[in-house]
Image 1 (cartoon, helix red, strand yellow):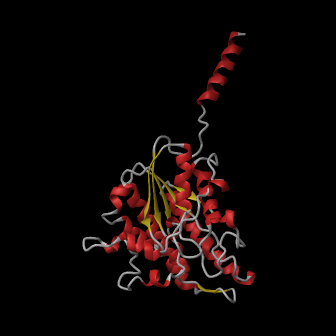
Image 2 (spheres, helix red, strand yellow; image 1 turned 90 degrees about the vertical axis):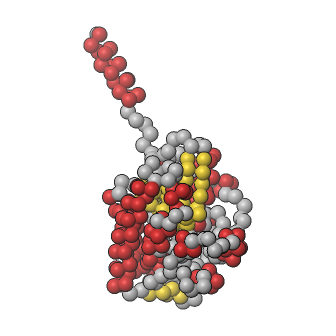
Image 3 (tube, one colour; image 1 turned 30 degrees about the vertical axis):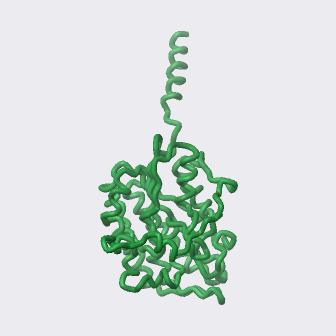
Length: 298
């Protein structure tokens, strides 16, 4: 009888010893930095900056636990992985990152999408395979270096590599398969590099699918609306908190868009400013061409 009681006691104790928290959630005050391209910055389908997935992540974390700090100053429209790597190595980046304990990265789509010719009127999509293969290999190499640098700069941070959705839902169905395959390759590269670096990968493509015209509403632009960004934020929380945190519709803040011109005016660049740390390298020396023309880069 005593032996049976001891067995029951050990079983009950074992239940309490099994960790029930399987998420990657940070406990205690969160210092969150969003790094990367215009998805991290919150670019809208009308080519302004407003609430993006990073803002919604910060907001939802703040609803559930202390949020000590949030910044998306290291995110900029048009950034390729090369630009993100250079930004990461800039003097402005270290103070933002060194105390961060949550970091998200959106990088890689611009390396690919700049090679795709999209005609919004006809719904056609074209690309050349060899340049795409080269670019995706460059994404792999740059992301390895980005994650390696982050481990040195922000050793306490939990890093989340954000995946990408299918950006051309308005294209003709006959045109989608080839591009979808390349975007899948991009996501596979990001996921593999993240796994090898022992960081988290956040898949977002399932929340969009190939026909998400309600979330990517502008046929001439690849950016999502706030509902698409909400899906991206919730995909993050599926990893961060095993779905225990979710952004619901009535938590989305009112629209407050800023044009790129207003943002540049607010930055008020001075002679002492390191412009190479503010603008993507692909724009330097081109008089802010991508900003002036509002090119539809991620």
